[in-house]
Structure formats: C-alpha cells, structure tokens
Amino acid sequence: MPPVLIAEDLACRRGERLVFTGVSFRLSAGEAMLLTGPNGSGKTSLLRLLATLITPAAGRLVWGNAPVDVEPAAYRAALHYVGHQDGVKPGLTPREALMFWAALRGLGGKRMAPLIDEALTAFGLEAVADWPCRWLSAGQRKRLALARLVATPAALWLLDEPTSALDHDSQIHLECAIAAHRASDGLVAVASHTPIDVPDAGVLPLEAFAPSTEYAAPD
Amino acid sequence: MAGFIGLFRRDLRLALRQSGDTGLVLGFFVLAVVLFPLGVGPEPAILQRIGPGIVWVAALLAALLSLDRLFEADYQDGGLDLLVLSSLPVELAVLAKCAAHWVATGLPLALISPFLALLVDLDPGAILVLSSSLLIGTPALSLIGSVAAALSLGARRQGAVLSILVLPLYVPPLVFGAGAVEASVAGAGGRAYLLILAALSLAALAFCPWASAAALRQALE
Image (tube, rainbow over the protein chains, first blue to last red):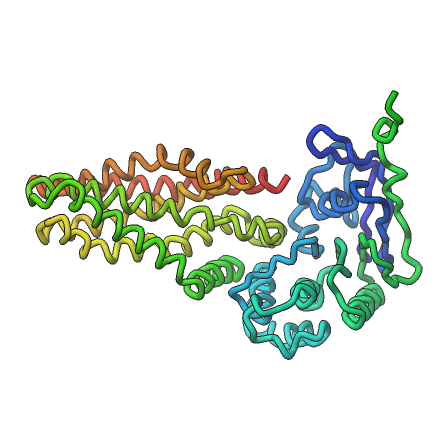
C-alpha cells in the first residue's frame, strides 16, 4: 500500500510549557504539507516529534497501518529529517559524509557510489565533492545536508527551514527535488519562513493549535 | 553492521585528520608524568614506589581530557539526531564511538607508557606489566567515560561536570591498574590484578553502552 502518515490529536510539551495541542492531519503519498506560524509556535517541535526525536505529550502517530510507537524502526527507516543543524563534519569531504550517512542507513559499499554522485550533482556539489567540509560555505553545507535526501531514498521527508542560507538556484534545485519526490509517491512536510514553491501543499497553521491560555492577555 | 563499521571508520578518520586532539592527550600524559620527578625529587627509591600510580593517574587525566569531544561535536552539529534515527541501534553506535575513541587515545597512551616508565625508573618486568595494564584497562576508561560524556551533554560547564562524574568511576581501574605494577615490583606478579582489570573492562563493555545510549536519548528530548 502507498505510504500514509496520520497524526491523531498530537500535543507537545517542552519543559513546563505546552507548545501545541490537538494537531491532527493526514498526509498521503505524493502530498506535501507546509507548517506555518510565528517563531515559537512549535514548527521545529512538530517536525522533531514527527521524526520520533521527541515523544508527544498526547496523541499518536500512525505510519501506514501500524502506530509508530509499535514499529519505530520501520518508520525511522522510511523518513529523512533535515534540521536546522546540518550535521556536517569539518574534517570529512562531502562525498565521505554522504557515504557515511548511507552506511548509517545500512546501505554501504560500492553500489552506493552512483547514487552519491547523483545526489552531489542534484545539489550542485560535484565541484567541491572532495574538499574538506570546513572549506564549504553555509549554503554549501546546507546543500550537502539536503543531498542526503537524494542519496538514500526514503518515503517521508521532514524539512526544517530547508531554504535557509540557500541561493536562488539551490532553492530551485530543492523545489525540483521535492517535486520529483512527490511524483514518485513521496511525502513531504516543510517548515519555512521564506516563500518556497511547493504546489498544492496543504497548510498547517500551528498558531491555531496553541493552548488557549498561552496567548491570554495578562490581567 | 555497515553502520557500525562506517561510524567507527568515520570517527577514526576524523581523529586522525584532527590529530591535534590525540597529540594533546599524549602531550598532557607526558607532561604530567615528567612533572612528578621534578616535584618530588630524583631519588629512584621514591619514584619506583610512586611511579605506577603516577603513570596511571596521568593516563586517567589524559583520557578525561579527550572525553568531552566524544559526543559533544555530534550533539552540537545535529549529527546525533541522525545517529539516533539511523538503523544502527544507539547502543552499538556508542560502542563504535568508544572503540574509535580507544584506538585514538587509550591505545597510544598504552603504547608510549614504556618510555614514561623509564622516567620513573621501573625495571623491564614492571614496564611490561604497566603497558599491559594500560592496554587492558583503557577500554574501561573509554566506556565508563562515554556514560559521563553522554550524561553531561548540554550542561553549562560540561568539562567540570564531566570530571566530577567520571573520576570517582575511574577509581577501580586505577586501583587495579597501579596495583598490578606494584605487585610485580614487589615480586608477587601482577596476574591477578590484570585479570580483575580485564573483568572491569568486560563489565564496562556489557553495561556502559546501554547507560550511554539511555543518556543520549535523554539529552535529545
């Protein structure tokens, strides 16, 4: 069956503070979702929650027909999370970094080489592929983090501010990659402050799920 | 398995390319041992008596110096998120990182220890026992250290918190490591001590990856 991600009544608590409650959505194959909301409305928290990096305070996630907490390994193998931090090590080259990330997903060896070349090309990194990453600019490091999406296929992409530090051409590369991913039945959830062209994406305005007491005017 | 080997090789490669880290640890080790004869005077009898303890304490402190880098870089740059999400169980990821840490710090410490043993006037038999005790005991230092490194992630003064957490846990390897050399100097043979040291390393191998993995998951929450 084609992949589907269902969120049921999710709530997130960070420390003492309830960030959002009652978030429900259904993301089916080929669909995209844009998370919107002001700073602090919980976009990053929701993406980290969807990536199983934090546990929800209430509600549950269902991937396909199994709840995520029953089969977390299968769900994690099916997702890519690209956060604010790019996870790029200054001492490795982009090619080594992609090889390593592929090995972490259990895809080691020589057969990865063509896929990694493809990923480097997709984000315009072929010229710097064998430089140490400490020579890369912030935008190039971000592109390297995004190249993971192409190097190792996974059904669900969770992208947190993927366009930050990207130049215009790279943003178009990213939009093309997202479109190609959706065309092959992939799912995408994006949080972005800058405009990003994701056609027919559903919008999840997170400020609408803030607990009512959170924004109450002081007496 | 590809993930385990990949992570081990990556960490080792990073350690070799940033060989300043290993150099710093070895430099600290040498300096700490050299300072003692300068401080307590050059009488061979005193140095022989306290030498094994000095070398072991210096090795503990040198290992401590490198621990904060074990998870900190991955924690800061987001790499830890990717490790936790990978198909490699976090426990095995910890083990791979500890193995790379040992090869980059514990092993070089054990390898240069014979030269330092000469500085404190140990005889050849005792030098052999000292190097063996470091070879057998330093895996425990990396493994126990990983628990403290994981627990102290995100702490405001990580280095200080780490030292306070880890030094008490380093007491058993220190007692049996230095004890092995002293027993050998006294003519009793250090075999029993070395076996206990090996048992400590094996116990750390069995227990520490789980504890570190739990602490890492907690740090990411």
